[in-house]
Image 1 (cartoon, rainbow, N blue to C red):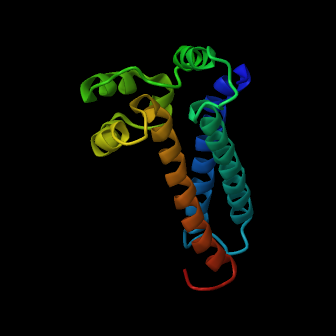
Image 2 (cartoon, rainbow, N blue to C red; image 1 turned 180 degrees about the horizontal axis):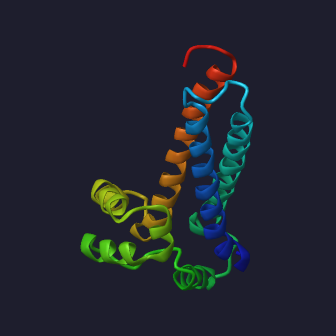
Length: 173
């Protein structure tokens, strides 16, 4: 595991969030009735959406590398080293109960940049039990929250792109 991946996952996720929000904002501005169908905002928004999705895809790949199963050929101390690295880089959470997780996640600097406290609490209420059960580790809920938020932005951007494409082609929106 490279140290760079642990640091870059939040950089890529943050960049994806920013670019996707810019794309959504531009698509919405383009879809306003006052904006001409041939306006340049459509192309800028489309490029932002493509760039944001690329950052999201790379964040997803990095998350799988960091939190996925340990290779069978890894050294015995690899799991302990990886766990310590993930804790030091604040990639995983330490809380075991809903209350402890709520406190930890609401205090997290990165999550506060991409989600409101209400969104964090709603996500935790909706997905706490599912994350705790099955093969998923509760410690990974922070990354799952981040990826789910980015995935929702990608879907919203793609929906707006389809509407904007209809406007750009002169079709009814």
